[in-house]
Image (cartoon, rainbow, N blue to C red; front, side, top):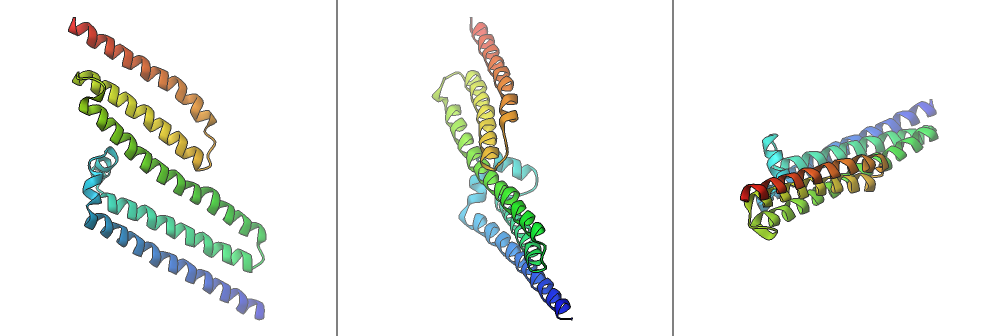
Length: 199
């Protein structure tokens, strides 16, 4: 009987941990949504590709980031609840596995997500600078160069973010090499065609 009551107690504590995570996740989602809306970050994100893509999918930046943060909190607290049960009921292997999942996948995803968002923003800002005529006064050439640079830098950001998130990107890097050369060849072809038109 004492073992039964102990198990019931630990399960109740685990449920409490999950409930706290759910409440905290909803609060964080509401806080982020309100913060983005009141500070004008929703409008600021619309000046970038990622913000416009979110709008097309039906989300403002605040709603999107709030939802992502909420789901991360839900998953973290759910895994913590499972880890608590496994630890206190004597399932050490399960406890170690859950902590490994928490660190490897959840923490890895958070790093990947943050690096990707900041990277995409920096890339879009740099490409907008190119569009203002920093490299050329020819609108066609500037457009081609800018989009080429955008794609290449997006690939670099994704590769770096995946690597920081704990994913082996050796295969991905080898796949990106021919893609990069193909894009470079396409860029050269367009520039040559443009120069021939001017003659």
